[in-house]
Amino acid sequence: MDVKTKVIEIIADQAMLETSDVTMTSTLEDLGVDSLGLVESIFAIEEEFDISVPFNANDPSESEFDISTVASIVGAVEGLVRVQKGTPA
Image 1 (cartoon, helix red, strand yellow):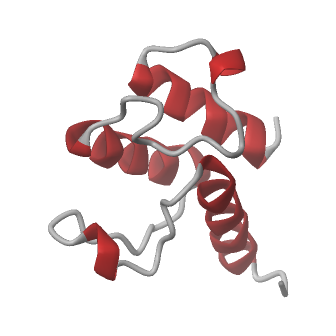
Image 2 (image 1 turned 90 degrees about the vertical axis):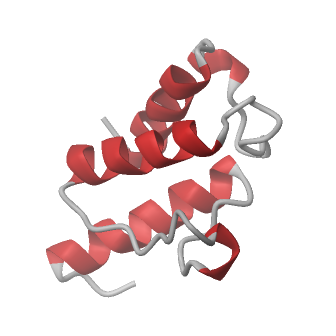
Image 3 (image 1 turned 180 degrees about the vertical axis):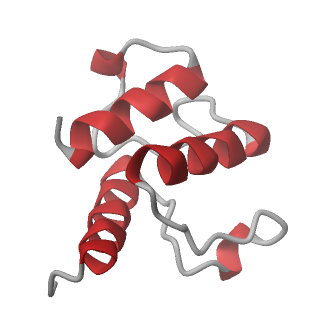
């Protein structure tokens, strides 16, 4: 399973939606994911991909991890997975 598919599944699970309801242009706000759901999504992503996400739950706007859209989350996770595996960007 690829990163995009798994991230969408995790976000859909937190939003209690079908994966087909989650688009790459969706924001977490569009999907009804609140701050607790966001933190739980981050934990699930870290566990699924065995990565550490640079995210500050107390101040999300100051985090290096872009959560503006599903596409930005997927891109950030793909980048972290590459770094974890030691593969250049």
